[in-house]
Length: 122
Length: 297
Image (cartoon, rainbow over all chains, first blue to last red; front, side, top):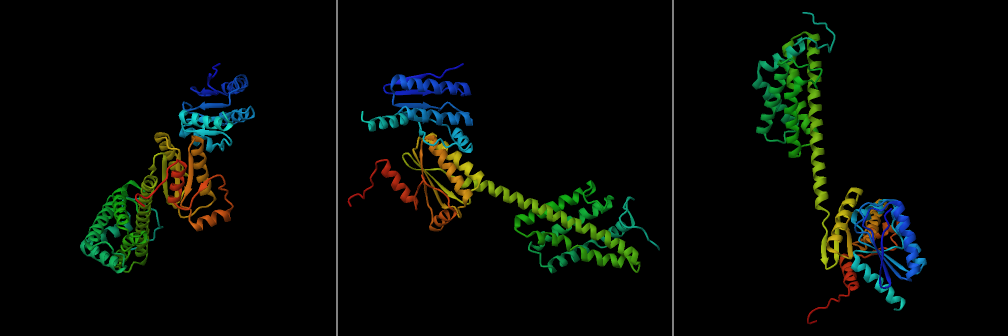
């Protein structure tokens, strides 16, 4: 089974989803990410889904769940690069991903994370 | 002469009623067409110029006579024998629809054929009441079906026109404009339904990705009414924009619309709304860190 790599960049974690997410991959990512946040003490997570072209309600909910878990572990999550078709699909599925922060691309996403980290006070 | 036969058993190549009609039409074609034309102008439906009317009359006359001569059954107007007449009538109603005549006027044009035809049939059959009745019944049926056919094609061609206009309107009415670096605007004009919202949403989201704009302004000045459905469409668009990582302002909310929104209990909380596009642009500039000052002021 594919596992999605989680990279560490300073105080943030970087997750780039390059394949279409299977349900099991998604669950594995959720577990890996929470373990990694705990392990590294990261306070920001950036999830790049620009390569993701197909989503279903499960993946949509998983994004919400990951964000919730990270928040409990005191890390900010930013989802970046969502494709228009994916956004429309999620809206039609009735998933507005409340509480998940989004940004247009990785650069802007990093800016959001940095701003959040500055607010925490360096 | 006893023609006591049941109605509507048109089996033979040319039965007696059809023969009577053909005889009447052939007797004096020129005068017959003149009678028809004057009947048309009497009914007040002659909006087309007399030249076109005359041409149309001649075309229908020829196709009708041709059909009857070829042995087409007046009782079964859908038959292949009537195809030339179908085409002529279709052309008539299409050109009338394009000129803006009403369906009534167009079928009236065909119905005007009745009077000269009946008058001539009466003269033709003399005192034979049964024969006259049979001939009148057959010809009346035929003319009615012709008028119906005309009205049907008229309606179809009008529907085509409406359909085409709708599509053109859809394409025209959804431009995404760039107002400033990182600020896009969509001036919505006309009623918002699901297909239009979908189109606007798609083109707006696409442009957001292409330009990397962080703010989109949806201006609804040109939207005549906002009901719960329209509000829901707007909310969907805003949610999709947020999912992409951009932000959205809705502007151009007229006082009446603001009242309607509150009366309907539509929840626009969490969405930035502004009265005018100018207000929205001002907010956009300010949030991007721009200040606008008058030079030398």
